[in-house]
Amino acid sequence: MLYRIEGDNGVFEKIEPVEFKDFSSFGKLEKDLENLIAQNILDILFEDAKLMPIFQERQWQSEADIYALNETGELVIFELKRASAGDGAVQQALRYAQDSGQWTYQKIERKYQEYSNSKLSLVDAHREAFSLEHKLEPKEINKKQHLIIIGSAADDSLISAVDYWKKSGVSIEFLPYRVYELGGEKYFEFFAPPYDRHKNPRETLHKSAIHLSVQPRV
Image (cartoon, rainbow, N blue to C red; front, top):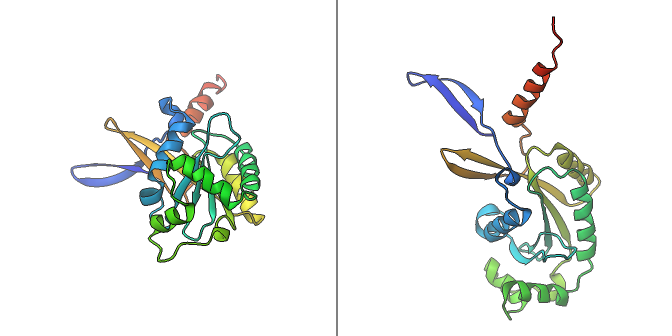
C-alpha cells in the first residue's frame, strides 16, 4: 500500500493511504494488461524467478492469457483480470491448466514458433533465454504446470478462491496489481505474496457516504 506523508514545518505527523485504481478505471482492456505483462515478464516483473513467454491468447480461442516457461521447463500459465472478476476466473484457469498439461512438446514448440515468428527450436530458445550451459531435453518441457492469477488488489473473492485451491494442493498464486495516478503520471505496482490486503481508500469513502445517506432523521 502507498501512503502519503502529511505534516507541517518539515515534521512528519501522519500518513494517509493513497487511492489506487485498476486498468478498467482508465478504459483499458484485459489485452492491454496482458501485453504489458508479457512484454516485461522476463527481465523486470519476475527478476528473481525469470520466465520466458512462449505464447499469448488468440482471439476467439479458449486459451489462457499468457503461457511461459521457467528455467526448468515447467509451464507457467497466467490468467489476467483487469478488474474484479470473482472466483469464476480461477475455475477458468484450472480448465486451461488441465488442457495444457496434456500438450506434447511438438505442440508447444509450434505455438512458440508462431508466437515468436522464429524457426528456432523451443529447447534452443529456452537455453538462450536462461543462459544455460546445456539445453533441456524435449521430454523435460511441461512436466509440471503452475497457475498465476493476476488481478486487482481489491478483488477479495478472487483472493479467497486462490487461497482455497492452494490449500488443496494446486500450484496456484494470486499476484495483485494496483495503478496509482500521481501528479499526472501513472504508476504500476505489482507484487508477490505475502501481499497486503488493505482496503482502497476510494471504497472506504464510498461506503462512508452510503452510511451517512441512510442515517434516520432525528
